Amino acid sequence: MILLVNKRISAFNKDACNLCGECFHQCPVLLLPIEESKKEMERLIEGKESKYILSKCNSCFSCNLYCPQQANPYQLILERWNDLYKIRGAPPLYRFVCPTEEPNIWQLLNIFLSNQEKKWVNKWVTHKPSPNENILLIGNYTHLFPFVIGGSKLLESYTPISRLDQWEGGAYLYQGGYLDTVQKIAKRCDSDFQNWGVQTVTHTLDAVHFIFSEVHPVEMGVTHEQKFINFNEWMLKQIENNKITISNKLNISVTVHDNCYSKAGGEAYWDVPRAILKKCGCDLIEMEHIRKDSLCCGFGAGASWVKNMSIPFDIISEGIKKFKEAEDTGAQALVTYCGGCLYLMWATKELMGSKIDLYHIIEIVRMANGEQLDYPRYHKKRAWDIITIITYQLLISIFQNNFFIKKITYDKNLNTFWPKKYRVLRLIRLLFNISLVRKVYAKIFCLLMDVMKTK
Image 1 (cartoon, rainbow, N blue to C red):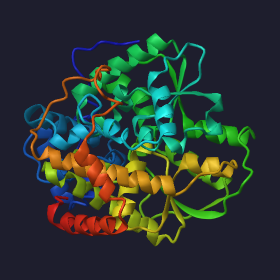
Image 2: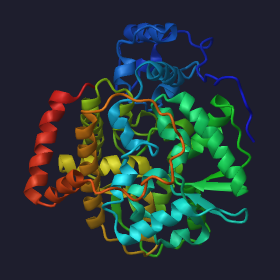
Image 3: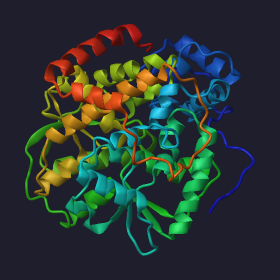
């Protein structure tokens, strides 16, 4: 049901904020001195030019958890980014994650997908659910690694579907402060759900759960009638009820990446993945920064962009911090329960040459359930597919201007899933098949990172 409002409702509680400065003082990224933190919050409230936050924030939600007054300073940051977007638009490289822009990552990746992956993705994006179906929203970013869940026994209870132009409910746009666009997407999502006639919606992302159940009704004025179920919670219950059999205890040591959106739900999102890992036979070793203090995978560094050309370097630079913490634990594997984090973390892993294994939690459950995965062959290939696309998009963005997101629904008559030839893109990918080229590129990227990054 859509509750129409004249304008969005800001979740920042200005009256509750007493300018104590704890939000940015405790921030695991900024760690501002308390007095500077107070001044920065005052500047943000008054709409004055930000000295630190709008150019350095990793959009990780932690400040909300540090605020003793529950004033929601994170939402104030998003409001100010939204103000900036109205003035300057989005950076050219952001077309990369806009399904209504051409080219985008999903369109370009279709060049490199296997035939089996194309069949999975095509079915997910074209199937129209009926009211009696148990649907699982696969998520935009699972399209990048469809083999994580495609063909799995875990899907026997569900009809997997996806709509790229649901934009994960607007989750990643919300994290970048594109709030007015998120409100339009919220209404579109509600229209989709009503047309489908479904009563429950299961999803693979904490971000989507928070967006549908909290952001849409509280900030966007759009209340959905459906019940939303987190796939991690579903898997844990299935394991506890022996409907998912743990026939192959893994006996590996792992450390857990808590994604930024997990902080919005607190213990509800943090505890379930850890319980799953333990039941799968994993020995859990925690990193220095976890739960409310967890560091971002890197994506949020792009939300606070300063220069278009610096975005990939800022993102990977922040992602490297995560991997270094993971490696310091001595764990054999780093596990994420966010598909959005997964694709950037695999790119980071390859560029920095990290030796720690990287899994999505769905893969852990599949292996413990006795399913055979071709790890890490597909993952390494896909990481370089994505690095290719990022490189290509960065190059063409040199010749593009900032833009505004004018459409939230992609044109099905365009080549969204059937891309053009893109010969330069294919050439770059062909070169990355050569081990020496990959090593040289990674070295050059890391050298440029120190020059280009703005964080």
